[in-house]
Image (cartoon, rainbow, N blue to C red):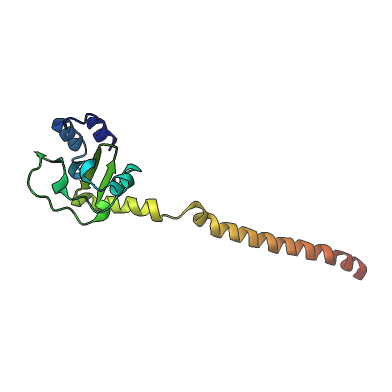
Length: 158
């Protein structure tokens, strides 16, 4: 995203060769790299995308200023992948960059998404051992108190 936005720093024209170079750098992972003008997209969506990269259902490619594929600029109609985690978009004040992952890379994306959002936290990992240590400490403490209480009684009995 950052590399693409640095190429798009000039609002007058879009450098197709620079975008193609960025696409080629990640060609094993990307299916499409699309650039949209923020003027053509709903303002609420732009504000949402300015917060950072978001996975969501893709913006219609027919609204794109340019779409880059493996062989350069794509002019034919593109049917977006309906797998919502497979498309990432981000915006700045002038442009929205959206890229779609290749079908072969979607399993990797799904695994990364699951780990990021649904992996156990540190508390979950250490919760059971901490509970067992606390229970053991209470049992040991109770046993020591009982031993201290019964010590005078044992001395009297002796």
